[in-house]
Length: 77
Image (tube, rainbow, N blue to C red):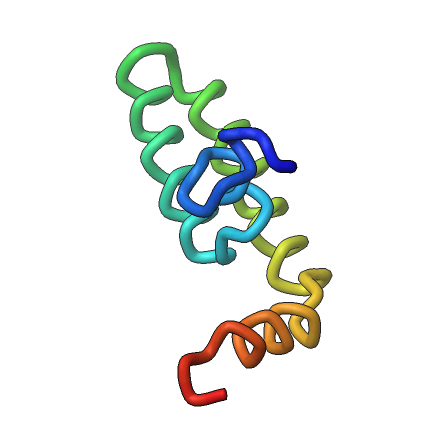
């Protein structure tokens, strides 16, 4: 039994199964908002956290598991 947040398309599913590109895109938008609303220091910190998080997801993501999931869910199987 899964909660609504764990269903495909839910926020938690997106956060745990999202790609590094989507993390970078959201972080870039957040940095721009921080620059407008707060100041350059807050925007810089958000940008640094975004870049470090994006690199971590890209390097440490479990690509074989993701590939298995895609193969298991493919319609050609």
